[in-house]
Length: 96
Image 1 (spheres, rainbow, N blue to C red):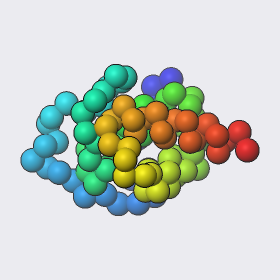
Image 2 (cartoon, rainbow, N blue to C red):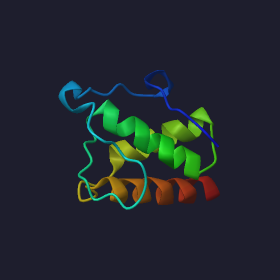
Image 3 (tube, one colour):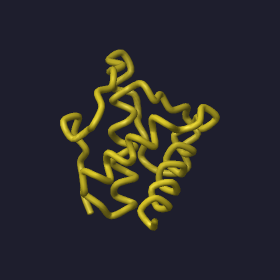
Image 4 (cartoon, rainbow, N blue to C red):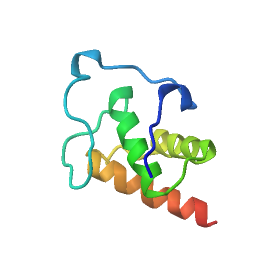
């Protein structure tokens, strides 16, 4: 499944770190690079990867992921940890 999450798909607005927008972003596990939860350019590829793993293109699932991201504990810091947290949490929520 090929999916692209666009800023207009999101429930919330996020700041853009324009100075770092051309740096490599999340492309899969493992990824130990710190995650900037306040940068749209970091958020989009990560949400896209989780949506693909969930095999979903449902906007409600995307908005659930955003809620999980915004409530995520601060000790979840790397891109890999964020991916695993969002995927695991979403799977639990969707099972219920």
